[in-house]
Image 1 (spheres, helix red, strand yellow):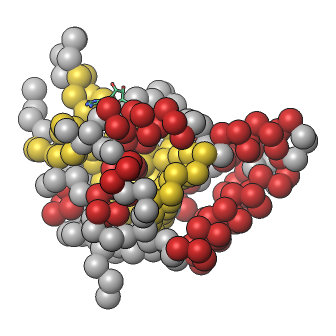
Image 2 (cartoon, protein in one colour):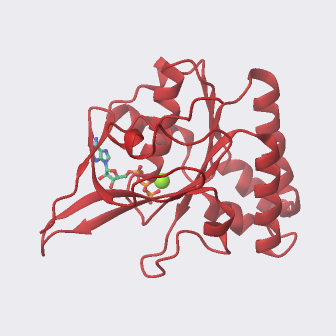
Length: 234
Ligand SMILES: Nc1ncnc2c1ncn2[C@@H]1O[C@H](COP(=O)(O)OP(=O)(O)OP(=O)(O)O)[C@@H](O)[C@H]1O
Ligand SMILES: [Mg+2]
């Protein structure tokens, strides 16, 4: 069997018994600002340094600001540009809206992903974010659209990380039944530790086929590298 995909979050892969099983579709779910995009990109980045091919589909943040943010954080895209393609579909989104072509949106995205896979091969895919995808997928009922998209992704057989922005109050990892559709869920959050301070945390909520820890860990990020340490109780 193929090796699982490492998250390269130091200390966390051990908790997942090696990483994410290949071909899984995993939600990276969290409130705004919990470093979902950074984690998604860093998984592509570190796997690319080990030779794996990745693609990052940015639906909400322009490519330039995403890469500038990663660069400032210590992840230089230049190091992996041969292996990681970053597709900016923020404009495509606006254009399809302007021209009344919303219906072709899901088709455009699928073609892009298929092209990437056919041209260079694809080991890991990040979609940032599924919330924007949902807004655009208007041809059918959203649940049906998402179900079809997940089925299509599953057949594609590329390990996929889907970023899901949680609303502050819902407590749902993904809307429209996404949490059930996904093979795995990693939850990111900022946990208040007292009235003033908060800590970043990560937990594996589910990962089909893996006997994983369900603890929250403190998530640290330094010099472009994520690490988990055991979270201390107050
Ligand atoms: N070098 C760094 N070290 C620690 N934290 C950082 C660093 N660079 C950025 N951050 C923090 O990361 C957060 C944003 O990260 P990121 O964009 O990955 O989060 P996100 O969950 O994708 O956010 P959004 O909800 O905007 O999509 C910011 O709030 C910023 O404070
Ligand atoms: Mg983001």
